[in-house]
Length: 271
Image (tube, rainbow, N blue to C red):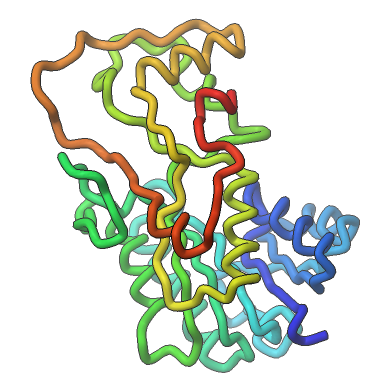
């Protein structure tokens, strides 16, 4: 049963449906939360629940079954204005993992690590060390070559799906900049499916961008998204003359390596 055991650190909006999908596939899933109120919910979904707070390394369950899984999915994104707290959390986790049975890690990251560019952004593009310093440092800690595990990093674009409707993001806002800037989004179902494919195909020691195929402009997408929800439409500034740096995330490496076809390739059609 050991080979079919997976632990998910962070059973939130993404982690919980991922855990449910893995349970359906026959995995023994161990899931963590930072709130005791959620423990019963995890148990009801046949997920073995753990209360884990990376801010308190002395309370991390080093000897418990959570860290006995061969595969660990780390899904704890940094909170806004967290200072250096997130870096400390990942360092705490790394210290515990050094003494665990974990041999494979999937680290959930974000395309926010990239600098805006006039070119299509690939996994090799320049990183934004000024505005995404914590997340970049976290990737380095978890994927360091001296660690006794293999790591695959998934840099997800903007997440949307049940409970996270894009139409609410900019509804009613006015004079928004960059109406033609491409939107980079990925649906929840694609997120969970991609993680499952990485596990199934054993694609380790990789970095993947995960983003839908199509990139509608901000004005087109968010206006239609608000309209679908019958919310006040956003308004945008006039289109600018000339091309300015932005982000157009390439998913080609992921599609080729995993032979993956997106369930929701066009965010407009997924609204």
